[in-house]
Image (cartoon, rainbow, N blue to C red):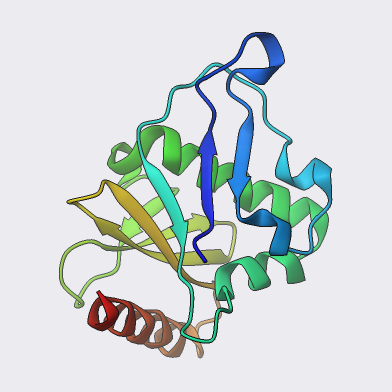
Length: 156
């Protein structure tokens, strides 16, 4: 199952620009978490959550484990990523993860991170692994995200 996050470009008034989570019925979130943003933005970039072979979505599970306020802040960053894409690169919000080849980035908020991969052909950001940045664990978390990326690429 694929989980997609996007802003609906259709409808009028509040329906236009509505934040939509396709496949989100499997997540343990409240309806307010799923539809908290209203605006008038058209879709440019696709966001997908990495799905393990077992069907588990680690980033979605990680987001659900955070308190509501932190979850909303991080989801706001994901929405901004969808709206702005690679324009965010080398800002305080997004940076490349060096030493792993191109297309491997981290989305940042405070000391929380989501490791992600940009798939150029489909203009999609794949959210691989979420973690809280701690100096002694950071490299291990990045290795975990990179192994998920390699596993994802081997399935395609």
